[in-house]
Image 1 (cartoon, rainbow, N blue to C red):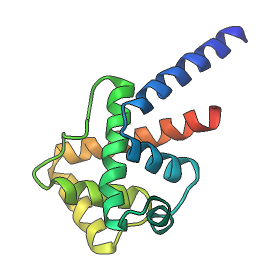
Image 2: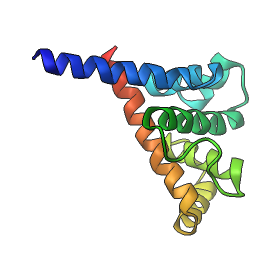
Image 3: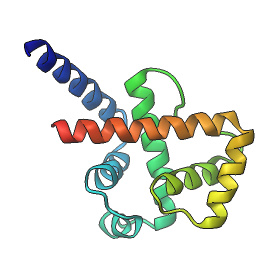
Image 4: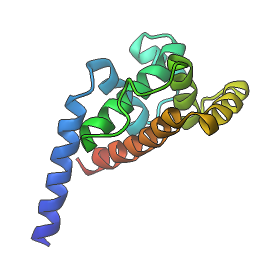
Length: 137
């Protein structure tokens, strides 16, 4: 049992370090979304940000968290020339906040864009790791 506790503590320490790699607004957004499950409308009120800004903020924060946690893979700047549109659509789709037209577009886009498909996988992994770390604290 002591070995399991030590492993859990080491994983938690790595996640805490990765969280420090995310900027202040990103840490707040991740906590509100991943730990508290707030909608974009609720987050917008709490953070005094436009809802349209939350998708890219969450996407970049998830990518920064994951890149720091894993030391490689998709980082905040590893998307294609569609940039903000792709990040916005990826985050909104992941968070069940997507408009149907953007959801269709991003699925078609990811079928052709390896960078955005990798970013999507990294964002999903980041969310799972962040939620696991949050519950274990």
